[in-house]
Length: 179
Ligand code: IMP
Ligand code: MG
Image (cartoon, rainbow, N blue to C red):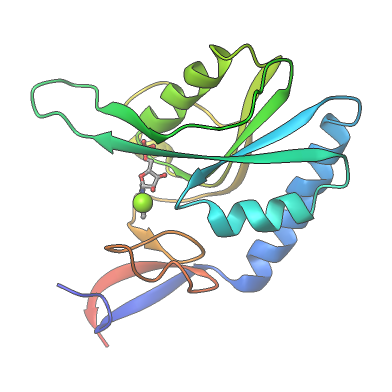
């Protein structure tokens, strides 16, 4: 199945995203004014959001990248996460802000927070563009949230469908209706 022939419902327009990113950037800049901010962007989903959010931050910031993959284990209630590419920089003593595209089950973020705390970061917080609270499998809440959405599969602005559509500059939900 492809989604090219399905109707797309825009959830967050380019303008919605731009103004929310500005607000989040202002808040983060205030909160990290006298701290040692280190943003860790989770690839690939957050690459566009992270690039916008760091440009809306006005305090000094270092940036690193991490790639994880998550597996749904049929035999366990919890999925497991593996690190495909770890953050290369030494983050000891830094105030780490993890940036991701979406919190769905929460399993990825829950894991990455602990993984980065173990590297002796001074603090570890998280910022996500989207939050789907109804899908949570573990008790996790991001510290900065762009938009809270219903349980719909969403695509665009970094989020993919079979690795496509990350370049669409807005967030949309795929409907069952044909175009
Ligand atoms: P979690 O570990 O279940 O919270 O999911 C984390 C990852 O699943 C996200 O970083 C996304 O890459 C992916 N994901 C979850 N929901 C969606 C969606 O609606 N569209 C595209 N990717 C999603
Ligand atoms: Mg993905």
